Length: 288
Ligand SMILES: O=P(O)(O)O[C@H]1O[C@H](CO)[C@@H](O)[C@H]1O
Ligand SMILES: O=c1cc[nH]c(=O)[nH]1
Image (cartoon, rainbow, N blue to C red; front, side):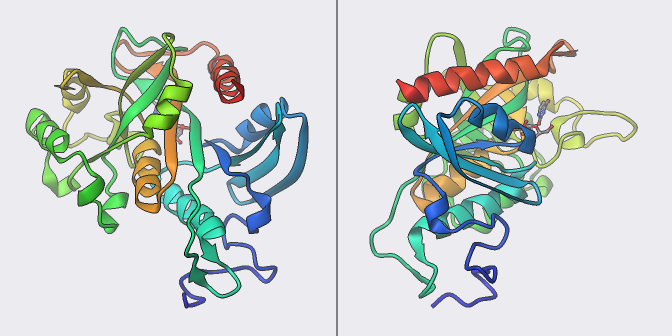
């Protein structure tokens, strides 16, 4: 039995941070970072059966073109993904009454619709990127046993190419769900490695008033290439979703609208429009 200090439930039996009971979630789940993006997606649903919010975690479940879907905001960063993935998994794979893992496990389909910065001049603002791999620069996943799910050769090549300072922790690389990749891909979406940083400024090479440990890191990442895979973009959740998804047995895919281009210093003139277009793209593919 899992102790109440480890699997924390609210007085109504819902999981601690997400405030959800098992019946509140669908097997197809869309993650967004921003809580205000949840309704930008569910406005297209035929019906909404459930809504709740606690802190930055807003959840709505409804039906879109005959398919039951849950849309959930994760807030910012890998630390939040640790909470969201563990509590979502508990909802389907732990009997919350007996506090024991179920014998028959459920795999969720999880698709992130996020925003991101591109590292390449040829991946312009307002374009879309699908993360074939998540490159974790954040360390959160290193608290788990990940050697069996990591792309070690790619990690080693990245560490060598960037002369990565291991004082910052060892980067990790995890692949997406091939099943979801096939369902969501098209000619109009770039594919590559998505770097997941543990912060927005220094950890993504942004300098305002503070010097950073390696000011050449973004340009080294820009010209990294492993067997035809380049690092397309930087954001703050994908590799944590991919890692915990793989460890827990869920299918995960991350799509990002590019709102900043770090190579040429530009920012989208209408980032909300880019996100709306990515939402339309993803919902179109999900409904196919
Ligand atoms: O727009 P979302 O989905 O939050 O994604 C990106 O935006 C946030 C930073 O502004 C980080 O969460 C990053 O991953
Ligand atoms: O550059 C960017 C843009 C959006 N989100 C990020 O994390 N980084």
